[in-house]
Length: 366
Image (tube, rainbow, N blue to C red):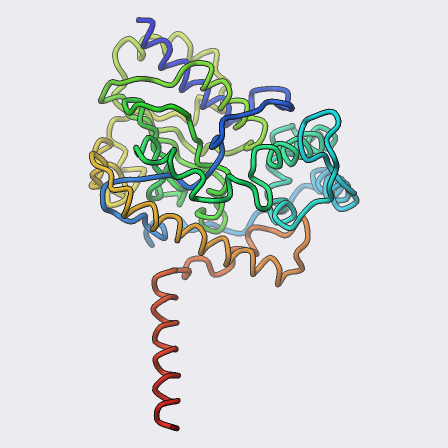
């Protein structure tokens, strides 16, 4: 009973964190080395899909803000543009540095709006949380040149495939698989850079947890640390949580706890064991009724593929952001224009063809 209680509590903490219910920012918290590296290890020999299926629901441009919300957004934007510097850590005597390119690139229009929504459109509170997140990103190694931006630094934490980023649901949201039955030492949410893998107009993830196999669950303390990180620094991130094969004890406990959850969070929970009506079968794990076998894990095949895909998409977005002015507040919708055609393998092949053509021309001229 105690084990089941810990498992349920751990995952409910995660869900609440995605909704930004942790309260105050976790300023001064020092997290484990790989807490927020976004690119996760993965499944058997399959490479991650580069795009959602064409049959999934296309997104429309963001709706216009109300006049009141626009005023509050402009207040946050003006503050960040006027910001001269921030501390490099939470230490009282930390030196201060101006915002770097990576931080300005992160501060998109949608990013600012996520923080405003999480603070119920309190501009002052949103500014405080945004500044705290920038300091936290610097301290944990997610800022420009930081350790957590380097795949080789985080790779040892990804060798077991304990969390997997693979495929998209019908609303084009990336799918994050958590494996409670796989032994974990550190919990590593794939959020810090998952935005690079999100299609245009998508800002949230689909979370999948399957209790079909038993094993060691993360400790409550680990989950609390993760909860604070997600709630304070990745607000408005959960699309839907798909939870399958819940043991009877946990099901009964959830019925007791459910009324205590925020209605928004509760509405985002799905307990169907088969979710092929919500996720295309070709991009869904077979334990949820799909066709993808995640029972084995080939790190040597998947890791390079997912790193290549995420890095390629980030470079595309960064180039577009620079083209648009390299400013705070540029819309992700504009940065990701044309992303449905981005394909690292196709582009690499095209480069090879062009190089071969140039070589042939040079040989003919000589």
